Image (cartoon, rainbow, N blue to C red; front, side, top):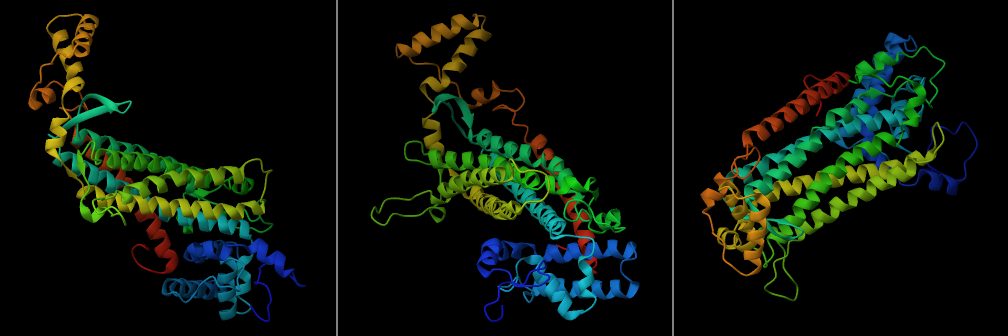
Length: 463
């Protein structure tokens, strides 16, 4: 800024805007927009392909703009191009950089587009890269849980309902549930991806542009499957896509929050089945004996906070009429914050799970009393007694303090041969699901990365 002037804008044709109003409307946009710089440059590289195809750029202008934008991308990666205090947003920063280097040509780049479809494109490109990364992280955690299950497949402990001992379970069966839960969510990503894989460019402010813009050419250049068909659907969909993405994150978060809560509970003195190593715990400033599960408590808290990010988006987008509204600017903060929280908790739990230990003695000691009552009922059923009579007899014996037979661990396991049970974990089938999900992610990552690399003028994939 010069002489106390407000940030440079792309919409001020003349006259001075109120500085206080500008500060209020710009808000934290430069901070959040820094995440979108590379995507704004890449989106612009795609846009000029459409301008050239529509003869709105000469061959020479197109070549010079493409070369300059590729230099801009390198400048972003080197930290030389930033969203500065003198910029209203990411679009201003990129166009300002470009026009200073290509006066008379750089000004052509905005033909046929608005900041409205430009930011929608930036966010979709950002989301593609981020969701592919999150999917990989979620699958890494599922893999770590499957490895934990494989290591502890013979380690029995009680399963719980209503926070009371219920029936025999195992460390493996516990970990397997979370691995499958993560897979359930990651396997829904292709449906979300279909919403994401449509180019908004060419819709301009929401009603198209009176120019022969080749929207299909732009979509193809940017690696999208197709354009968003109705130009009016782009702005009407603002917030909808962000909410769908954050809902996907909350489903991962609910799985991670439950996992963290279980680790906290099962590692407590009163249970002691799990052991958190010292390097993953913290101490007390006053109680010298304390080792606290702060890592897992903060995972539980961060996972819970994802719900608030989703709620913010849902409230922001609700009850708005058709078309663009400046309210959409505030969608970025909860979206970016939620995605970054998700990445953080996935990474930390993937680091922590392989380091968890199991106390065999404590787990075995808990396999007593009512935990074995249902096994005794089913043993009598197999001997011919009607289930309801066997149930009543065992209930009376437990109430009277009678001791129940204690089958061996091997017998407890062998009696549970149904698919997915204690004696038939089916780990290979779950690993097959994981591999299929990872193959999908690798395929889409290659397709997306190759499109970005072509725009950047590089071989292979752009990470």
